[in-house]
Structure formats: C-alpha cells, structure tokens
Image (cartoon, rainbow, N blue to C red; front, side):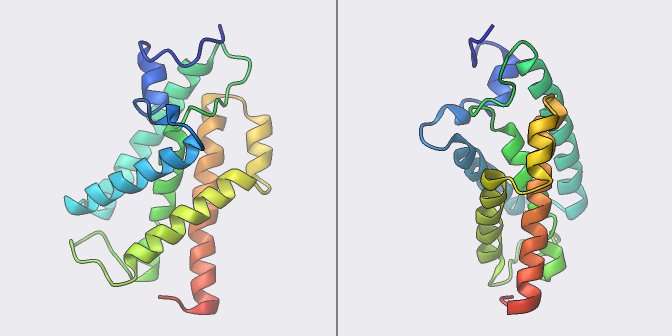
Length: 174
C-alpha cells in the first residue's frame, strides 16, 4: 500500500497537517512555517509557558501515534509529505525563549528581539532538520516508527534552541 497520502484517511490528513505537507517545494519548510504561525497565534492568546508545554507534549504524543498509524504499511515510512513532526520539533525550540529573557509566555508584550529570535530558531531548526548531524541522522536511519519520525525533529528542535543560546552567549545578540 504505497498510496500515500490519502486525505480521506484521518491519519494521513493529520500527519500531513491537513494538507500542508502537500504544498510543492520543501514541504518540511511549509510545515515549519505553519508551526511558526500557530506559535504566534498561541502568543496572541497569551498561553502560559506551562500550557504551551502541555500542548507541545500532547501534540508530540498525537504526532507519534498518527505517524505510526499513517505509515505502518509503507516501505518508506518517513514520507516528505508528513510534516506534523516539524511542528513538534520547531515548538520544542521555542521552549528555549524564556532562557534568553526575551519572552516568558506570561504577557502579550514581546521584547524587541523576540521576533528575531523566533526567526533564528525557525532557520536553525530547518538547518538541523535538513542536514541531520549526529545523533539526528542516527535516529532518522535507525528508528523507522512513528516515534522515530517525530524524535529526530524533537532533537533538531533542541539543537536549534541550544545553538541560539550558545550563539547568544558568544555574540550577545539579545
């Protein structure tokens, strides 16, 4: 069964993030852009750090289950049109924002550098997700399950967050 995706199947619809993964030219980047826009929506509604973290955890769990169901009969389990994992990964990088003292999720007021920081996190996440340095490449090659599909993006998100923190330590951007 290599007919992927069939948007009539709920698992395919969700794993492509309601068709975002079907957009041409770099579907992972489109998925990441959707994650960035959703994050801005969360900030507009002033979600607390705790609520955002809970949403991220639940979304990641749903992503793992959905990816497992959607790809169980596929030869190539990490299809390019699956972008729900990019959303979990980029949101993971946003957990590092309070460590920069730019935004603590407790108000609608963003510091001047917050948009720059989220854009840098977006670019850094895409960099790590595309190039897949070790251990991301190891996870991508060896964990061919719904868990593995999502885990490599979560690790890319951690790499992006740590890179921004480290870069800021040496260059003092923020």
